[in-house]
Amino acid sequence: MTILQRRIPPSFRDPASAPLRKLSVDLIKTYKHINEVYYTKKKRRAQQVPPEDSSTKKERKVYNDGYDDDNYDYIVKNGEKWLDRYEIDSLIGKGSFGQVVKAYDHHEQEWVAIKIIKNKKAFLNQAQIELRLLELMNKHDTEMKYYIVHLKRHFMFRNHLCLVFELLSYNLYDLLRNTNFRGVSLNLTRKFAQQLCTALLFLATPELSIIHCDLKPENILLCNPKRSAIKIVDFGSSCQLGQRIYQYIQSRFYRSPEVLLGMPYDLAIDMWSLGCILVEMHTGEPLFSGSNEVDQMNKIVEVLGVPPSHMLDAAPKKNVRLCGRDLILRMLDYDPKSRITPFYALQHNFFKKTTDEGTNTSSSTSTSPAMDHSHSTSTTSSVSSSGGSSGSSNDNRNYRYSNRYYNSAVTLSDYEMTSPQVLPLPHRSSIHPTAPPQASRYPAAPAPLLGPTAPPPPHLLAPRKQRAGTEAGWAGRNRWRWGSAGILTPNE
Image (cartoon, rainbow, N blue to C red; front, top):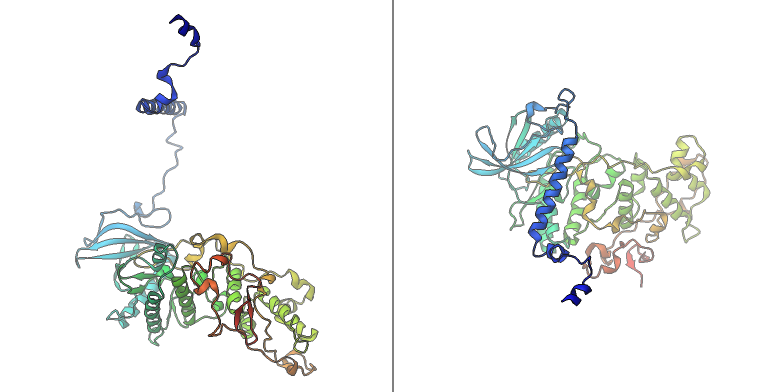
């Protein structure tokens, strides 16, 4: 025994304080000790801080007699009863316009969605336009067969305009998310397309002539989570033909070229959005996913080619990159007979801005694109049963998809997949009174189109497994080429 005691070092740890014991047998005691130490230190720090002088204490502002927060939104309280009729259940959506709550209508014995507009004049004025359009549509759709959300009634409550809608299910973006962004079947996509085309046909009737201006998956809701019936919601950005009041419209992924170029728009912009939506519903990915307005236009050009010359000529927002690309392609024409000459090159739209400003052509190389809208002020859209946010709220949806769409900026080298095309030249008399006759040297060639027999681009219609090699986008160089008949064909 004496020998064993001699072998034990004098600094040997007591088994009761061993870490293994503290984290196993004595784990509860360890947690209690940690709490005691923490709260003791917290109490000591609180005693060291001098008491706050009530005279210098900043008073909390009260908005709308305490009913609103500092963002002009109504402070929703679950279980609250409005007008002795609507019992608030929960908040189901929020956007730039305000909030959407789920409520129970005790008079009608049904669930409804109430859209609560912000307590601010600008939002109230916008909501009153939406209210007028909704009432007009409901008047012409008494049987509710045109797939437009039904407005039941409206009222003012504590300085907030409230719109009462039928309660719908989740939206098409939620449906895509449930598929892990793999997309839905072509059969289901066809059912959605037929209903949406019927709705747009209804909006295009002469009595209405309504442009939705913000058609996107978030603003298309299922009536029942187990059925394919849908309805269009959120007419906060809508207007009637001839009464266009908004310049910045449509969420970027679904924004039409005429809006991107700053041109006058009409009912056709909703059809463009619909085309983008249908591709996204089937593939699970947005068709054109630009990171800003210029990149959005470039994404469109990668697939569809350069816009027609009459659009570029009439566009207030002339994209210098598009014009420069067109000029270079004319210079690099294979056929020397149809290659652009210096005289006609100087008449090109690429030099038009510097010519109008009275500067020399050398300054055109530093001209920045006109489409420089910032999206930092865009607001998050509401995913709700009565509509999303007004305006272009979808611009900050880039988190939805992989960063592979935003890895690099588009440059002129990225356009090698499209063929040079000769756009129609202006009449010789409009260029110079003594211009030589060169129309025969520059025949107008048709713009290349996706032919009916052309294989589809892989990121649009091909199965996901076949798209595995195109994760960086199908716009890579030398992957596709334009055939002799103007048809997009893959390289062998």
